[in-house]
Length: 585
Image (spheres, one colour):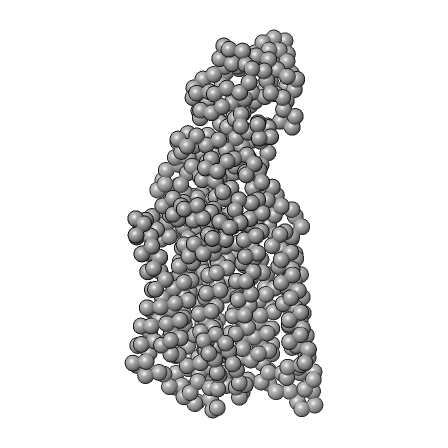
C-alpha cells in the first residue's frame, strides 16, 4: 500500500486476537526455524525463575498493606470506612474471596503472589499482541521475552500489589486501541478497560491524560498522509469511550453510597492523596526542568516511527503508543508527587517492544548474506535477555532470607494474638489483626502528621482499645507514639507486648521497684536469673495478677537477674523478654 494511502493498511485484528499480514516497507529479517522454540524456552525458564522468586524475594511493605485491606473485605469490613486505605478498591474486592478461602496463614503473601502469575501471563500476551499488531510476529515474540525478564517488570510485578492488575488493564486497552480502524465498539471496550484500571488505581488518570495528549500528537505527525474518520464517527467513538470509562467507577461509587460510605471513599481514595507540598513537590521543586529534554526526545522519536512506517495509519498507531508511553514517563519524572518503581510499569512493559523493533527491522540485506542478516539481530536479543537475567539476580537477590523472616514474623503474630485482638503496626503488616489507629502510616500520612492535618492520637487509641501487642520500634512512627510504645511495651522477639523492664533486685537485701501501668491487663513478673520472691502492692506475689492503671510497687527479695513486667498471656503463649525466663512467685 502506498505511504499516502488513506486506509489503515492490511492489518487485520479482532477484539483481542491479532492477525497480521506483512506491511510493505517494514523489512524484518527472515524468521529462522528455531526462533519460536527459543522464545518459548526462554519464557518457560523465566516462569520457573519467577516461581522460585515468589518464595524467596523480599516482601515489600506494600504487599501486607494490600493484604490487610483484602482481609478486611473477607471479614465483612468496608474499605475506607472500617479499614483505612488510600488506593482504589477494585483489586482488593476481587482478591477477597481467595483470601477468605486461604484463611489465616503465615505464608499467605507467597500464595497470593502465586495468584498473580496469571496476570503476569496476560501482560506478556498483551506485549506480544502489541508487537505483532504494530510490526510482526517476530517482534511480538521477542518483545514478550524481553519484557518477561525486564528487571523492573520481573521484580516489581512479582509482588502482590494493585499494580499487577493495573498495568494489565492498561496494556489490554492499548491492544484494543492499536487494532485496525477505530470503531464505536473498540472505543467503548478501551474505555471500559481504562475505567476498570481507574477503579484499581487512580494513577490511571495519568495514563488517560497521556493518551489524550498523545492522540492529537499522532494526528499532527501523520497530518496530510491519512484521512481521518468522519466527524460523526469520531464523536460517537469519543462518547463510547467516555461512557465505557465511567461504567465501573460509577458502579463502585453506587456500592459505597448504598452503604453510607461515600464520604470515606472520597477521602481515602482522593482527598487523602491530594496534598500541597507532598513528596517530590516539596523535596525537588525543580523537577519540571526534566521535561525540557524529555518531551522533545519523545516527539522526535515518534516522528521517526511515523517516517519509517510503511503506511500512515500504521505510523499513527505506533506513534500513539510511543507518545503515550513517553508522556507517562515524562510526567512521572517531572510532575508526579510521589514516584515509586511500580509507577513506571506501564512504560517498562512496552519499552522493550520498541527496542526489539529497532533491532529486527533493518534495511534489506545484500542477497548474498540473508542467513547472517537473520542471525545477528536475534543473537543480540538473546544476549540482552541474558543481561537482564544477570541484572535480576544481582539486584533482586533471592537468597538473603528476608522473605522467610517475614513469614516467621506472621507466624509469631498468629501465635501471640487471637482474632479481634488489636495490633499496632505501620501499614497493616500484621495482616490478620485490626489496627487501633485508623490511618496507615505511609508517605502521605506522614506528611499530614507533620503538617498537623492528622493528630497523633496513637497513645490514646492504644489505651482505648487496650492494645497488648505492637510491632518493633521503627522510625516511621510519630515521635509521641514512638516514645509511648517504648515506655510501655517490651520486646519479645519479633514483636513487643505490654510490659517493661523493672531492673535487677539488690544482691544485699530487699529492693522496692515502683512502676506505672497505663493499660489495664493481666501481668506477670519474670526474671532471667534464679527464681525470685517478693510482694506486689503489699501482697505476696504468687502469679499473674490483674493490674489497673496507675502506680504499683514490687518488693523483690535479694537475688540475681533482671526483672520484667509482661502481659501474662504472652508468657503463657511461649513469648518472653529473656532467653530463659523464670516466673516469679
